Image (cartoon, rainbow, N blue to C red):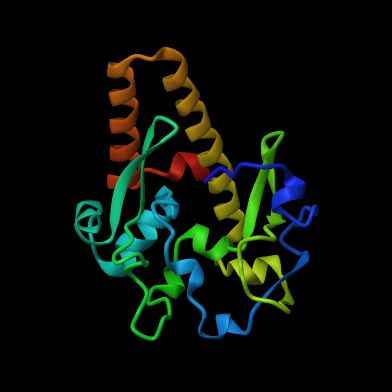
Length: 202
């Protein structure tokens, strides 16, 4: 999700890469679940996230829509997000822990990091006003993300970002309702219903 404000306002001013260390460690959150509550529709899901959820939960996209996710319009594009139930993530268990931690969405893995896109690439940034934990310890970015095939994932993230940005701009400039509907149906069916994300990876 795009953030408002300057880089200096929302981050520590540094750019990070996978091998860099950043102050992310928080003693396994020590029971805190603040970032899993009151998030509205901000936990956006990309096709990689949806594929992980479908495989892990043995559910179709349509079944996920019935239980855990919802659709919202983001800059003209219809995208899924986690549906808050009683103002908290539906995957938060009674102990205040994530019940899908092994296959949690990319936004959750990233937090409190963010991504800064520029010149057809991106770097990681540490958002300073997000996590309320103090005295965090340094953790390697790659370890924090905990993604098996991180290079493939990063390639996907980059291509997905610019693909959605391109489609969003096309919708904005055309102001054609039929084209908007066509683009959104194509995105939903191809990438979320049918998992056709190989072209974004290869």
